[in-house]
Length: 116
Image (tube, rainbow, N blue to C red):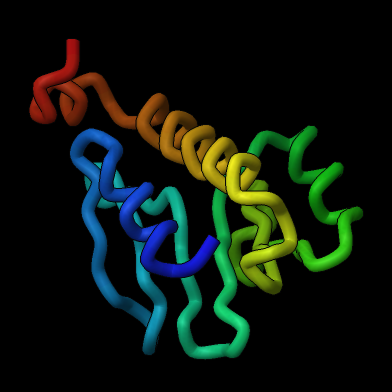
C-alpha cells in the first residue's frame, strides 16, 4: 500500500478525520482519538496502528515491524516500511484499530456522533 491508498481507506470510516501533527505525521482520528499514523518524514514512510495485545506480541516478532515509539505501551506497532505486510492485512489491522478506538469512546461522544 502507498500513503494515498492508506489515506483513502482511513477516510472511509464513519467520522474519521485527518490532520498533520508533530512535523510531517498524518494522523487519522475518530472523535479526536488516533487510530492510525503515517510518518511521512522518514523514507520509507511508516505506518503505526493500535492492535490487541496478542497481535502486538506476534507482529513485533516479524521483520519490518517494531513497537511504535511512545505508543507501544498501548499496543501500537509501526510498520518500518509499508510493504512489511500485504495490503489486505494492513487494511484489516487499520479497521481493527479504528474499531478498538471507537469502542472506547464514551456513550456521550457516540451519541454526539449519531451512534446508538
